[in-house]
Image (cartoon, rainbow, N blue to C red):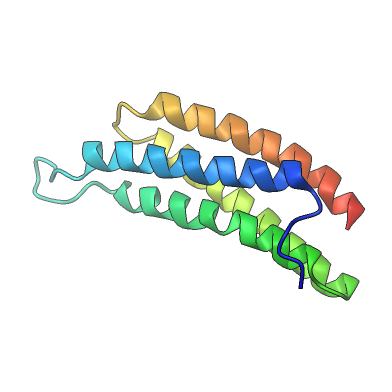
Length: 127
């Protein structure tokens, strides 16, 4: 089994997104970890963990898709990657609705995700 991806640009962008989302999450958690005035925790705090988990899954899905022998399996993993990317984008939008100083960083992450989606569309055609 090959552990190196064919499409290095897509794989590198996935790693960049993971690094960026981890940094953003660490920044946002500090804003959201205090209890609100009513004693409840911040409603969006769990999305910070979701963006890390989802961005961490991008690179392995690329490798999994490329290492499949049968095209149906490659397509299944590629579709999984598309779903993860869409969920990650949606969670960024949800976090932008929160009362946090990190909104500017989320805009940056969404721009990177748009670039990733463009690379992903090209990559899907090559599978």
